[in-house]
Image (cartoon, rainbow, N blue to C red):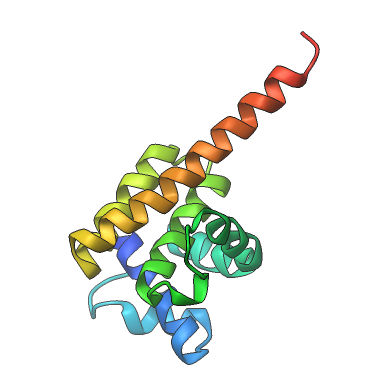
Length: 142
């Protein structure tokens, strides 16, 4: 399974967990096609997102302008949760790759407007993280 398809399956599973309360492995199995096999990526990111959900949601909520996280569509929320997890906890995935894949996934599920919304929120988050890292670096004695 390629990584793009794995991200789609992860978003579907995260969505199903949120909507039905299904255990994540059952949700993942339900999202898979008959011949597909889950790879290690899925067994890392899905429980990883769920295990850091409060932290991830707080970070997303801080970037929303005039919106509450609860008002964000469930699919867009699942896409952004996965992307934030990748951006922060997956050292092998460059931040810009996580961002671009999230935009493409949002477009696939919700069209161009969803892609623009996800882009705006995640770009703000990336920029805030980069600014925070720069400020931390600048404040250290060199």
